[in-house]
Amino acid sequence: MGRAGNGRKACALGVAGVLAGTVLVGCGDDDDGTGDGARSSSAQGNAQDGGTQAVRSAYDRTAEEDTAKVRLHVRTSAKGASETANGQGAVDLDDGDSVMTLTVQRQRIEQRVVDQVLYQKMPKGQAPGGKPWIKIDLGKVSAQQGAGDRSMSDPAQSAAYAKAITDEDVTEKGTAPIDGVETTRYRVSVDVAKLPGADTLRQQVGPTLPMDVWLDEEGRMRRQRIDMTLKAAPGSTERSSTDASSAPQKVTVRTVMDFTDFGTEVEADAPPAGQVTDMTGKALEQGRKQG
Image (cartoon, rainbow, N blue to C red):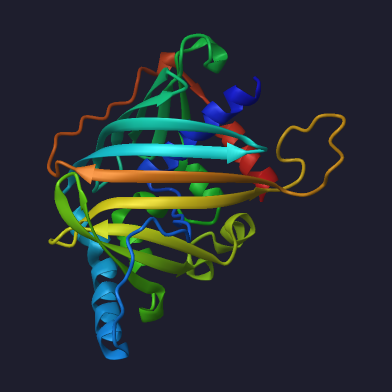
């Protein structure tokens, strides 16, 4: 498969990782115009304390809604080429199950996450094994990364990540409407050393993960923006015979995820086993190479 095909796969799996909660990554340091006004040190400290508490409880407050509709935009860039993917669907915030339709280069990919297993129905003729669906056991992949059996598919683990931040890790960045709902934006920095699978994560993304979240008046997350730069080890991706560089390849992924319509119905069912090709082994092999 050519460069466009590889980018398509990267986009789709990037979206899946976010939905299933198996990857906790951070937003970039660029500002998008939502600035801070001048504050006294006392006022800034009080606001920072309040923001820390808001972010620490955001995942719990969001998960308490049980379900939500999700809208995604993902942009993946590597070697000067980029791919974009858009998606919409619904997610069970309690157990991580989800249903999603992705659009990548004008092609549709149907996606489901059921009991920590990712299923994707690829465009006709692109799925391996002559079957319409592929699957990846996200529990096995996260276990290989040292993140335990449930990893980030458990909302309680997501909350633990947010609660691990210190007061200095949170900065309020102003307010903005998201789908007509007034929100407050916070920028958060998380120490990778405190996360499950820290050794692998540190090699791939560095020592810290900055993350931006937009919270509504009830403290629920309405938007999460993620910018991640992954470092792939030499030999983990295909190289041409003329490419003598031994430097790690960098892949950047920006994901914007919006939550709306809390309480919506979610029905995520696994496709028939006879229509599925298991790609878990390939995913584990790739993980070993990157590690």
